[in-house]
Length: 301
Image (cartoon, rainbow, N blue to C red; front, side, top):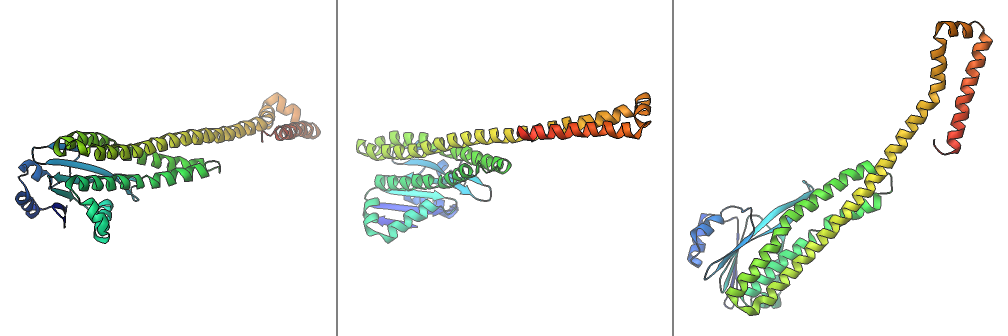
């Protein structure tokens, strides 16, 4: 895909192949190692500065509903004085959204393609805005946990909380290096375009810090909810154990009675008279019933 406005050119390449690399060689004298890197995904974000261009690798979190967590998406930038070349390896929502806005709104196209620096700024801003939107599912999951936490569903919420914590961790692993990337871009961009671009690049750093702040807030909230859920689960377990202990205590008199009559001399004494046997058994049963009534009165049962 190729979009031009005045002297500014945006070239977008999806799933680059050898022909695409040959095409890029004709566009600019890019380093062969960088061109080779474009043929596969990179595990690191970074900015590499050269005298007439720079190379930028940006990662963004993409929520995968099947995995129930965020995975890494990648966009590579080759930026010259008048061209911005983006390379990605799958269809990405921020690129598609940015492209639609250029095609459907002439005013936005004129503004965004005023210069290579403006094009880079608005593209990265779209990526950051997309990253912010990707936090929405984490917010919804936290709201769900917060709503359900006092409905005696501790075991179900324990699993839900674990998924949310993993998603926040995976999102953070992807998003955190982008702060270093944007700071490096600030340094390189000022050298490449001049000091006037500082305001644009510092704005990107500020926008990304909002993503980081939201993510940190969500992390603190889910950890607090996890602590509350853990306390409720412990209290529930303690109540169950308390009831088992009480039941064991209530059956002890009956168990003791039958254990005693199994002893020869005591058994002969009790069994020798049916009246004596039933009288002692009645006393034991009465004791158990009295204990049950007492425990119910004190709400132990």
